[in-house]
Length: 326
Image (cartoon, rainbow, N blue to C red):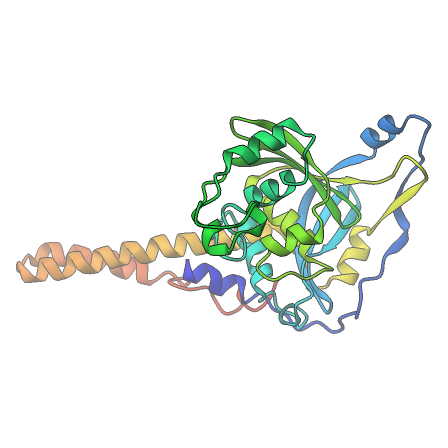
């Protein structure tokens, strides 16, 4: 695991030029006209995306969502100075890279019950929603606390409360605000509007008004492997989602790295860890064979070790692979 973190933290390349702020292309914007039927417009304007890749930029760390064949939407997830120097090294950026590679650390930055916490705090304000009230009744507050709500509890008490099991059905962005559908075990499903600052401040390890909402939405979507949708218009008027063509994307984000590249690096690290573990076992077997003076067995083990030691990528990445995101 340490080898993986070391690799993701080394995504760095010195570009010839980094722009101060991503430029949006109006020529490639996806435009949708509204109609008199609001529900039809909302349904038709929800476009399912796929994660194309990630990139660091002089303004932070971005995830690149692909909306159409040649339409990409860069979504900023951090504005940390650590990511503005050409390397994805902020805790948030590393968390996203790990999730993309199938590794969920479930640490303080993204607690395992983050979705359940957000859902319970949302339910506290839904007095007219029966499912929300049933969920709240299942959350037993400690008698030793004077708090009347879960959101009023100290973190020490919160960590000892059993929250309902929640899974994510979908995340939907409208600009940078996101809503989500959550399935709560034994209770049903809830459609939750964009969480406000008061909710995100209680869930995020460090809250940043401009990016924390997007980071939490993407991180949860990757954790639960749920679809990410984008609303491209509203019922009252024509709106656009500014996108980039692939050519514009590569020009604006020279440090772009595709999801396939991230998976390849992750697989390579996994293979290296497994090979290193095999070497450790063989070395232990060699010591045992020498202690028992079983020299024929020791010779076979040495030959196997020599074969593994000849691998150029053992036990760490070649320097050329860890030197860039491309």
